[in-house]
Length: 315
Image (cartoon, rainbow, N blue to C red):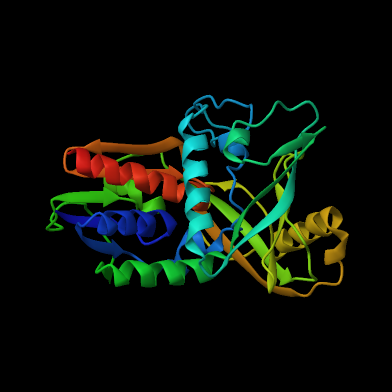
């Protein structure tokens, strides 16, 4: 079967890999190479962020009101997708992937997160959860994954798409991240800006994520650098780092992890997360939609890719 995948971020490439592995004739069409996607800006710690795993349930926003990006409706698929992605990372021996232990700090009295069962050795101690998971240096991993996809015979073309029609395929997979909403005529997708700062890594042994504040602060070491964040800015349309936001991230992250006090600043980056109230993963005629992962694309991609391949095979 001839299949075109729209999108070359983590989700798009994972889908292309699974489909080519199943014997399909696969092409990828994307507006930008993997290293220029939102996936390449991600912190890379594999677990669902609060928008997927917390106890707060999102209500639809009133007209003209920005969405609450810290909450979604409960989605039982998240645990399965996360567990499936972790199994893939464990079995790949891929560059840019390390398994590290870390901790997530929860607000006082917060119930157990929905994602807890996806992590085999998660232990809750008061208002913190400790577990071991994959920590992915996403630019490095995406280059490796692109090469693996090409080795399976997948053709990759970089150009902007204005329609999912006329691609010469039996099935089109819409995994174009933020661009997927307009391509599907889905106005529920909104960009949520996220700024991060990279510092030199002083040798931190593990990650830490603080979910106790109005936003989320995280410190994710990758050996050569540490990804520090972050922000959640609904409706943001540009990717130019804000120096004042960089200073605020440094203040929060150095308070959370004092060993970063003398770490040099390497760069600041901004990504636009593709936010939707829930991930859209369904077949619609000769289209399979797989988008709306927000800040969890790295965490959910391989699990979602398996479901996409199953939908294609089921017809």
